[in-house]
Image 1: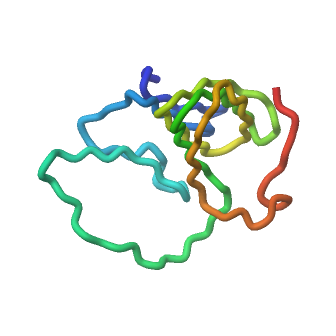
Image 2 (image 1 turned 180 degrees about the vertical axis):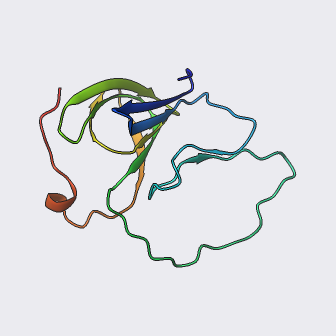
Length: 138
């Protein structure tokens, strides 16, 4: 783990990836494993470069697990991470500019300051009772 990037695992299962606001790399890198249904990358391009015009074709994919990426636009939050058996793993504070990829397991939040969060996930949820199970955390 560096101070700028962290993978949180439980029994070798990837639970979350945190990219701090000051993360930087000299190259494009994808953090998520290729088999995930959600991909998270850091794109690095030099001035004058380009990305060839393109569109994404319709490709049927099966999504078994909803994964989320949260961008903290403003404020400060604390995230508590859990296993799928609702066992507490760890907590982290996220600040303005930080990004977290919620890969598996459970999670809960405490809002420490007025906050704005942008969420990206496969969705929309088809049905709250089917897609989500609420539980009491720490």
